[in-house]
Image 1 (spheres, rainbow, N blue to C red):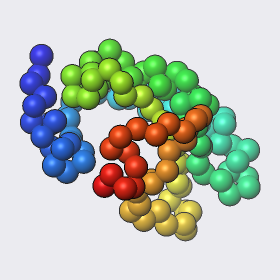
Image 2: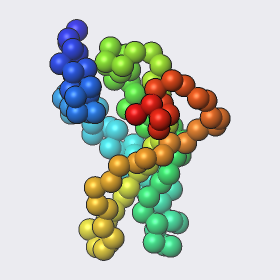
Image 3: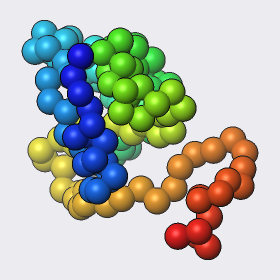
Length: 127
């Protein structure tokens, strides 16, 4: 198994890391095909009104979540982060070339929650 200490250091230092070759080429093609097939039928009605995005992507296409969070990726997440991590937001964009709206770099500053919990280290005053 891969030693993820370097990835852990990158996350601590930069807030992200890049781990290559999580999916095989065949897995990638299959995931893309599943998403395209499902998204095409879901987004067709929305596109008529100018919407090209899908919030709650994994709830709309649960098969994609199963394919993306396969055993290999779950193992990597566990090795790098531990057992307490989970998806809080999933958004899918299908921005066709003829569309003129611009998505600039941004950082999501909010997450969806079902209840508020005060924890040490997670308050503005703790920063």
